[in-house]
Amino acid sequence: MKKNLRLILADRLEPRELKSIYKSYDIVGDIAVIRVPEPLKERSKIVAEAVMQTHKRIKSVWRQASPVIGDFRLRALELVLGERKTETFHKEHGCIFKVDLEKCYFSPRLSYERMRIARQVQADEVVLNMFAGVGCYSIAIAEHSKPDKIFSIDTNPVAIQYMQENIRLNKVEEKVIPVQEDVKEVIEEKLQNAADRVLMPLPEKAYEYLDHALLALKPNGGWIHYYAFEHAEKDEKPIEKIESKVSKKLQKLRINFEVMFKRIVRTTGPNWYQGVLDIQVKEPC
Ligand SMILES: C[S@@+](CC[C@H](N)C(=O)[O-])C[C@H]1O[C@@H](n2cnc3c(N)ncnc32)[C@H](O)[C@@H]1O
Image (cartoon, rainbow, N blue to C red; front, side):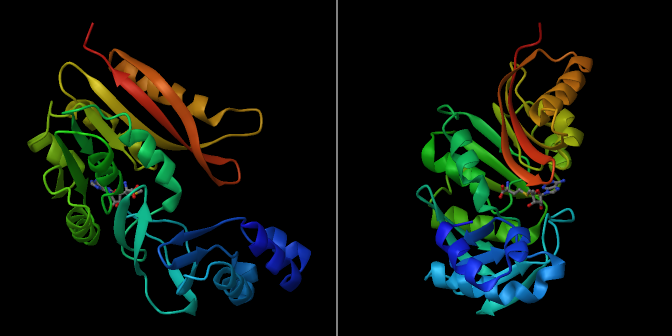
């Protein structure tokens, strides 16, 4: 939590309340999303006022009222303070993203990760973004590297509308191709052996879609950026657990591969983590 926000709240909340108000909140454009646990819900306004006092440009403060759920990965939001709007413009690493936080998935916390991937993309690569949302990874890649093209796939029609608008706003029409379809169908029907690099930013289901990521790669191989959630006790390493699961599957499929990089992207709950593996798939032996 930002230091001065914590100081303001320390004057207004009981110490036990301050402790159990989640340590973080998201700022997306001129909207803030706070996480106040259900039992302390009536304290939300105090938190929202403090957020607005600390961040002068914020016009609306919403409370996240459910986890991120469903195929489109959406969350319920309750207005706490300010304008009743969920649409905003968010700037990140020279890109601008128009998003509706109620109708599409967006997380400003993946900003570092988007740039990390964008910097790896080599000239003239064909990239396939399996779960593209409003297009953030795809647009970051188009802005910061020189790919041939990026197939940017999502099933959520609203996310696709925002993606199309974001493509225009960032002037990457030549590079980013929006596709509104189930990614398994797109790959099976049109994009087998097509990509040098596949992004899998749907941690809940990446394991289930790994075969299709492999199917999308060119016969001489390429890269898969594999995101997953994992539970780990104190004596366990979540990233090793993710690697072990994926490695077993790839070995079973007789894939020639190497995990070239791995890291924990963020903590998502008590003992829960999001990790990423950069997997290089090599030519079959
Ligand atoms: C966690 S969000 C990630 C969005 C984006 N990559 C980002 O980081 O902002 C996952 C996205 O996958 C989409 N999705 C879920 N199942 C899908 C499927 N079978 N085919 C294509 N997209 C899908 C959802 O609509 C959602 O926008």
